Image (cartoon, rainbow, N blue to C red):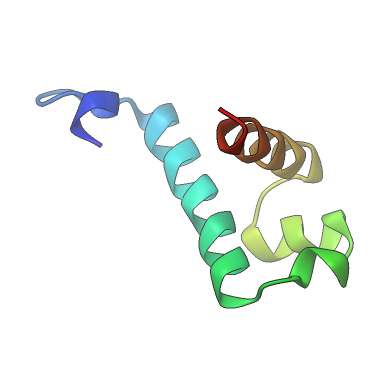
Length: 67
């Protein structure tokens, strides 16, 4: 995490994105298969983010796993 945010400065936007991605990943760990049962809009609402942003998070996680 230090590499992403630096030692003495905090990039608030990067921190917000990191927390939102972690929230989605934690939800997937605790409730495997939940994405198959709930609409994207419902998941986004639960995570307090927009459906478009959740789609971006999902895309980045999928892209990361294929590296």
